[in-house]
Length: 259
Image 1 (cartoon, one colour):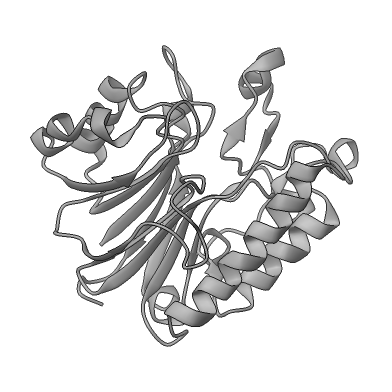
Image 2: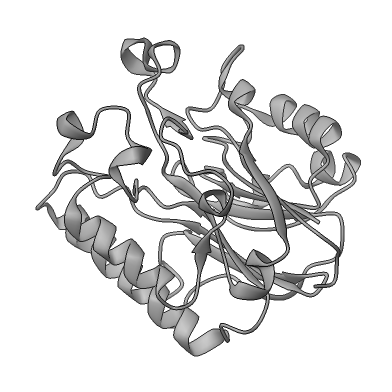
């Protein structure tokens, strides 16, 4: 089973790239963030034409999440229990072939100390509460998405420049660690320990070509999936070419299906 996550940064703008990626890479499950489209305008037929079922939760201009799957999605959850109908579209969960998949787009946070920053920390705390109330650590669970947090200095191209800044501040890192303490492991770090692996590069300043990146997109997995994870990679080439997203997909491979 191949599970991938990708902040697409507008599904309508990058639909041809997405369809090409699905046909070429053929993940079993792909979690998308920042689809930036209302549900009525989601390109369902194009996704189905590529051989995928899809569930989604969107809003205009901002946010939006979707789960694309080769197999039917079951037990779909489109929000955390404490969220009202006007909450931002940042979480989507579904069962796929015996695996529970949670797709998250964690708030960016704006700048350290701002109201948006406080909302980000609160949102991560609520995510932990959602896991506590909805899943068991002994079940196969993958929590995928754009977390907008680089967990450690080795996930940052220049740790000193980013020290205490948004995406890298200690409170953000502690909040993400608290989510992981539920019983989740960073799938990439099961296989690769080195620095210099990034998933996001700013559009400005030639950041991608200079290697100025951060690793803020993660596939966190419970123990039953961690033991079956045979490899994780960043599809860095998807950050190249015409009109790319500023993120690259993260792809994890697991032995077997119906885990």
